[in-house]
Each structure stands twice: as C-alpha cells, then as structure tokens.
Amino acid sequence: MTDKVSMQTIDPSGGPERAVLVGLALSEQPADEVDESLDEMKRLAWTAGAEVVCTIVQRRDKPDPATLIGRGKIAEVQAAAQEWEAGLVLFDADLTPAQNAKLQDTLNTDPEQPLKVVDRTQLILDIFAQRAQTNEGKLQVELAQLQYNLTRLTGRGAEMTRLGGGIGTRGPGEQKLEVDRRVIRRRIDRLRNDLEKVRKSRRVQRKQRNEHAVATVSLVGYTNAGKSSLLRALTHSSAFVEDKLFATLDPTSRRCDLPSGRTIVLTDTVGFIRKLPHHLVAAFRATLEEVVESDLLLVVADAAHPAVEDQIRAVYDVLEEIGAAEKPALTAFNKVDIADSEQAHQLISGHDGRLAVSARTGEGLDALLHAIDEYVRPQRQRVHLRIPQREARLAAQVHAHGKVLDERYEGDDILLDAEIEPHLRRQLIEYEYVE
Image (cartoon, rainbow, N blue to C red; front, side, top):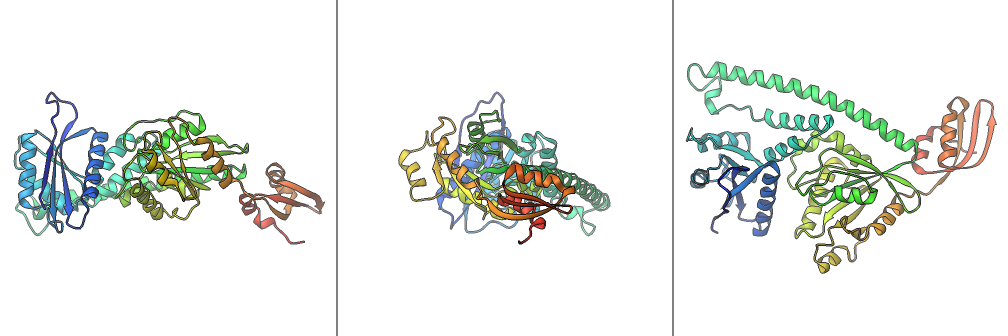
C-alpha cells in the first residue's frame, strides 16, 4: 500500500486557520471508510474555523504506540506544515496523553513556527465550546473539556516528574501539575453539582408534561442530517438552522399538533457522530436524559448521504450507550428531494417504521405526522381508583384526561370507575383497588 498526500490551493491573504490533516489507515480498514472519516474531519475543521490545506495518510498494520504514525511520516507532516504555513496539525484519531505530548515535542522544533497538535476529540470539543449558547450547554461543554484535559496534565516527559529532569524543573513542575489537578477536580465537582440541578429541573418539567398527558418525541440523528429543519417544518416554528456540523447543541422543544388533534412536544437534540467521545456523552447526561425519557424517538437520517446506513448505526451506538436503543422509534430519511430516487426507495422499501421526507419541500411530512400519531396515541385502560378527597386534584386529572364511567363518595374518599391512559395510570397506581 502507498501513502497518500493531497493538497488544495487557498487564498494566502489570510482567512481561516490553516491545518494539515493526518490520517492513519490500518491494513484491515476499507479505503472508503478511511476516506469517509477524513472527509468528515475536513468538515469538522471547517465548522471550527480552520481550513485543511494538506492531507497526509499513512498506511500501517498497527498504530505506533509512541506517536501514532512513524518517524518518517512525522517529518513529512512537519515539512508540509512549513511549506503551507500551517499552524495546526489535526489527527483523525484520539491521541493518548503520551502520544499528544510526544508529537508536540517532535513537531515543534522551529520556535518561529509553533504547531498546535489537535486530535479528533479536541476538535469536537472546540466546536461544542463555540456552539454552546445556554448556561446548561456551557456547563456541559466545560465539564467535558476539563475531564479531557485532566488526563493530559502529564507535563513534558520525564523532566516533569520527581525522578527525572534537572534542577529547577522537578519540584516546581510537579508542584504546578498537582495544583492544576486540584483546581480542575474542584471545578468538575462544582459543574456536576450545577448540572444535577439542571437534571432536577428537567425532571420537574417532564412530570408536569406527564400530568397534562403531553407525549414527548425526541429527534435524534447524525449531525447535519436536518433535525432542526425538520423540527421547523413539523411545528411551523423558528429554530436555528445552519449547514454545519453540530449546528444545534442546546436542546430545542416545540409543540406540535397531530392529525388526531393531540398535541405533543418535539425536542431537537445534539447531533451524534462516529467515535463520539465517551466523556462527552457523559457530560451531556442532563440533555440526553430527554432522549431516554421520551415516548418515541424520531431518528432523522440524510437520505442523500452515501454512508447513511453507517451513520444510522453510529446513532444507535450512542443510543445504546445512554440506554435508549430499545425505545420505540421511527426513522425519517430526510433530504429525499436531493437524494437519488432509487436509493431513497431502497432505504424505506420493506422496512416498517421508515419514511421518506423532505423538510425543505414538505414531501412526506403528513405521512410522518400520521405515523407519529399512531405511535403516541395510547389505548385507554379501565381502572378503579380510591382517591382521598384531600387529593381532589388527582380526580380532576382523571376527568380532564380520561373518561369517567362512574363516580361516588365513600367516607373521605372519591371512588372512580374510569378509562385512563397508561402514563396517567402509572402516576395513580397507589390509588387503584379491585372491586
């Protein structure tokens, strides 16, 4: 196998930060998989405000444990950065702390042209930091960044340890690292406490929606699949839309009227991506709980993307990680207006729960709303309830959201024979009795 180098001409007068992109192609990896990942990294770089001016790929049987790529390829990267006046080297992989430190040392031999080494996770974190608008989003991004950085306070090799280095480097260096660790850990604890308050607030909101019999549907999908556009089209509302990766970071909820007259809440969530960092998923636990607790998932996929099925698998990998993979789901293949018609037909043919739609033209949206309506329309269940009169508000809920067949009073209790929906029955389970 041969290595690959590709370059593109850019305006030398300034503009986005210039970057050299480095990829590692393992011998068992298909070529199209490597190319797909590199193309995605280029879009991530563009979203972050950088432009890839040179792409270098090394093919190896296994990664170099010290630097990911070989020494010769490192020299090639360094030369390319000098030639193209790039100040950034992007690695389409997650570097270990030791690899990152070693590459920083090896590549930065010219003090006149310092190079920043950034791996895939760092790049995604940078985009998230730019995109976060709400206080909740900023808290979650900061938590993810600190958790990532905590493992990388390794200093510059042996000179920063108590056993190595020279006079004037061991003590102060190690001392600073310990102070940094303590500061970061304290801040992480504070962020977790703040986010726990956010989670509690969200639980109260969900409880209120349940009390009012409002079903929730979460839009999930690969980044840039068109979730925000679909939310706007289905709810006839305004939602931020941009043709960039991770355009939506903070969750957006809108009410949506279904054909049956029922009202639901649609929630747009952060886009998923292949190799989404685990600690990033953990940091966004408060937001992703909306997905876990929703009544239905609407998986939005880009019908025009050649690797759409791979992207759907990546989405379900994340859903598996957060415990939502088994939830009922519909799949909306968006952008059919620009997709190959035969490919779009193959995506939905023979698959229940798959629909072809276009948020831009409105194609298939009525069918999608009817499908959602069928999924969230609950079947009422007959129950007998004994509710204390001091809890009369619960009886009022049964009247408002169910069908009361009989009502009578016995002592201080209200006895109801009623048909109610499953979610309301779960709330009133302690008041049920058998006649």
